[in-house]
Length: 266
Image 1 (cartoon, helix red, strand yellow):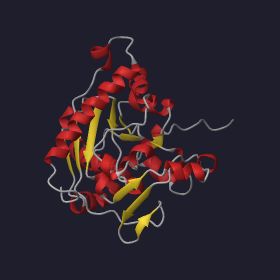
Image 2: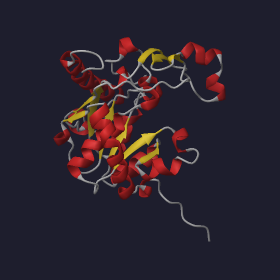
Image 3: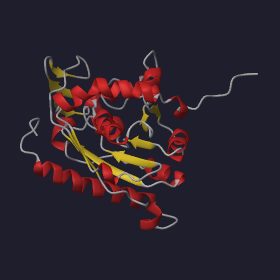
């Protein structure tokens, strides 16, 4: 008899996750001076945290959120992050899975939510994480709305969350969609962007060479939960829900931007 398939969700290792949080905390609280506000807005049970994505190759959204979440609630309630398939390829794949990252598909999301986990999704993905400097304070999911259906299928609320500062770790100039198409990266690597940025110490970069993230202050604001059925009815219009979620998030991000004195400094 063949061995039964092991669920990605059951691979989460609280002991390893606790160690990783200990290693990351000096970076998160020291280098990035990170703050997470509004954790009381996370209700018990399964919730889908919907967030903007910032920081390019070194996106710190999950570590910033997880550092304060676990410090507040402990390791009895896991955080699962829906990630791109390439994250799980190679020798680091097991590490990511054991620390709560799971391949982004509806089956994994549904299982994680129904077990009472806190599931983080970045609908904008790579399109969002490489948005240009002049759009750093803009909520843009690139038209992706699957997260609404994921919350509906599992019967859980959406908890919007916005972050500021992560897109100031270097100067993002362009997503490079034209370059990616010219080089046929969509055919070769399933990549539709070739982001161009300017940073330290190498200056201009098109993903490579890899620049060191600047010590930008990062603030994450967790917003009140949205009960989709209660607010939009038993058969909600997905596009209407998505527009409302993005509006709520944009309003909150605008408020954080208005409070920010200087880029990087915070």
